[in-house]
Amino acid sequence: MPVARTHCVGLVGVTGRLVEVEADVGPGIAGTHFIGLLDTAISEARGRVRSALINSRFAWPDARVTVSLFPATLPKRGSIFDLAIAIAVLGAAGAVPAQRIAAPMFLGELGLDGRVRPIRGVLPAALAAAAAGVRTVVVPALNAAEAALVPDLTVVPVATLGELVGWLRSGDLHRLPVVADAASLSQDEEHIGHADHVQHTEQAGRVEHIGHVGHVGQAEHGSHPTGPEGGGRSMPGPDLCDVAGQPMGRKALEVCAAGGHNLWMLGPPGSGKTMLAERLPTLLPPLDQEKALEVSAIHSVAGTLPPGRPLLTRPPFMAPHHSATMAAVVGGGSGGVVRPGAVSLAHRGVLFLDEAPEFATTVLDSLRQPLESGTVTIARAVGAVTFPARFMLVLAANPCPCGLQGTVGHPCKCTPAGRRRYLDRLSGPLLDRVDVKVKIGRATRAELLADRHFVETSATVAERVRLARERASRRLAGTPWRTNAEVSSSALHRDFRLPDAAMAPLHRGLDVGTLSARGLDRVLRVSWTLADLAGKDRPGQTETSAALALWLGVD
Image (cartoon, rainbow, N blue to C red; front, top):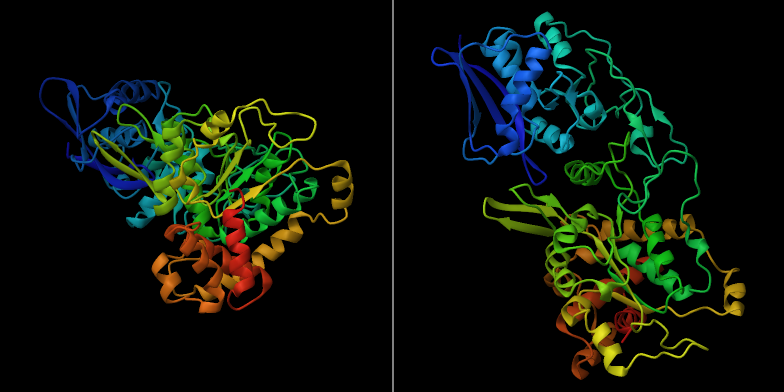
């Protein structure tokens, strides 16, 4: 029998690499041999694939079976290769036409009974397949909606190995495609029910049924792990008008949303810091198609995509507990399997650290590099993996360990040294990367009642944020940046240089030492955002002074 070849994808972080799977059934002592820099999960595939073939009523070759995964220098991990290995062995044994299996991509894990089980990372794998010129991809039925998000890709969902072999033998490509408007899969609607069949956008790939798929799953109401992706029963979401008595906090949220800036809120327990942070995603514009695919690919690798919602179109919101480890926040893993952490799951969204001083100092300081570069690189003995990590950081802290400093009627019992040690856990270099710092005090009854007449809904503020971002986008057209927070230092002082009159407050801050060089850049970015919100062409002294006050606010 000739060597049979098919294809799969190996994932390195969120990047897919094309892998050619070769199988040879030839003379020699009967046995199965896998080669190609494999991990334990793939080495164990010989048992899963053999049992799946036998229980699907296909004979296992009574010969020497050699399976090679090329390129041999690429580390290959996980059970994503099971289906491709099984089809390659069947092709080498003559059970399926070898020419029919050469072009498609096969992704999926096999159960011992021949079922094709869903896997993580289907979306980045399908994106890699399309980039490599593959036009047909075979995936587990429960992953079909996810793969169908990729444009110009024919998706073949399968539930069992037997029906896949039947399709390969028949050569019948004229199956009933399910083509529907994927708005319910990609948009954040209030009323989401069961996804009774695979759906995708008009621009996405065609889904070709070769067997019963059933429903993809049930969309559930999102929470902290995946942000404001709504679903399930109709439930009212968080709204900025829920927060009364904190006009400065609401204004800080609007500024940060408009420019993509980082925020630090300092205030006693119960003052509304968490409520404000949870409402920041409601002010952000939806993700465009490119960013939505980018964010969804990260959550696909992490296995955190909501059931029935393969495309995340709202900015994610991550709020890890203060006991989270370095690996949980930045990313990591063991055995060569590296998973994205909270900073990557918050990509294009918000990372909220409540009770920030309670986090380990090493965890807090590890945020400095992704805040600057927008990526995080995790090095292991087998190599380095880079994940995207461009997020808005929101820190919330009490003024002291007991949280009562400055509150009326509740005297603080913390010592001055204890208060200093508590806040010193937030290092100067980290706070230097925070653009907006505000104090959040407990509102009195009179303040709550008076402020009720001035609160605005998230929709109202989000419209101003949208207009401000459009102004920034027009100004930054032709550059790699889309928000003010992304503009480089050199561009700020060269292409967007402000007149001396506007810079006067900042020059004074530099002279007296209250403003660092990095802080100067942060203040300039916020001043441009304030100008965009005010509808001005460029910041004046009013905007730079206000931006400086926001940067110095908590000090």
